[in-house]
Length: 545
Image (cartoon, rainbow, N blue to C red):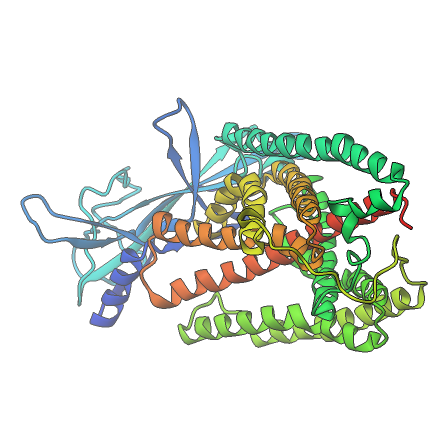
């Protein structure tokens, strides 16, 4: 610590055909080398040309680079074999101690020279000699990667005092150079919310108030027979839907997912999930998912009992296993592909076993507990009685077609989040830091409001056209935004990423499929509960004989 080194020889390696080929492939695929010092990741500072004195940090340094010798057209691969480390520290003058607050590197490719025969790592180099004060400052004479070539790896270490305190050392890594576009994202989303809020307010205050007043003033039988609109389907609106068990399962899973995301967002926005705690965010999400199983069981059982269901154990098992089984199956296949590629990114068997234990040992019992509590409570009473014989649904206009309505409804929730989605995808797939949870929390709240409002608006139009099959449509209306999420992920793959290997492509689309499926469950549940509240509110407000 605080002892600088110059041109320290690490080792000399002779490349063979196999290692040379592997190095070239790594360089072609833009592989980076990552290191950690005192829990700080290694970064390469890059000056931004568009902003004065602005620096962005690249996570890790590239294995090498490609180029051509002067006067030659052959493309060669060169390895970064010299690293100049800069370790920044903050000094405490009272205790005479120093703490590391920065870890930077500048990589170079140098064809090292030496006199005589190679003996050991203490050999003096002619290209880099601390005694002659000859340092490496450029890659003008780079080290080419070829069979039977010797590569000498060297490094410098410089210590630099910094005013940054240890508690604030992550601020540099997480600094936002483009926060304006995040504000643009929020304003863009707020415009959508204001538009929808205006429509909901118009429906609730003007149309509904007028409708309820009119319906409550109908006195004669003749007038009652002439009524049209949403009141006409009051005897069918709370009729249990087809596949009601599946709806209960998805609603319960959505509640579980919503609780996990909400609590994670709050803790992250308050700064409890620091990036210095590696994997802290994912660990927190997994544990919250497991413990939110209590609410999943409760929500699915309450809805199931309202549908006059009696076999609560069956619905509980489906809630505990359906969504996690699908996600785990996809994840296991993707992990098997990573194992096949001999990648260090594969999740080991021990961690897999821990995940299964969390699922079966904690989540499933909690789902059962929540389901038992929910089922033992009195059933939710319908505001109006359901007719024994279902009413015939009249022919619908083209714009009220279920598929058209559902796909249209998903556009606005996706539109509220797609700008922030770009930054999330960039941080996940392009190895950048994402720690702007304040913005993300605002966007999440906007997403909730958007999903609720678009579902209420389309649900009202649907009931006015005398179509009472709103249960599944309310879920699918906002849930269809997941389709647009997956399509955007595909667009991002082909326009922003340079992935050519089939396994890498399968991994990308596999993980984005899991993300889209989770987004479907989350947004669908938000829309369902909004519509559920809305229908109960309006039908409990009118007098029905």
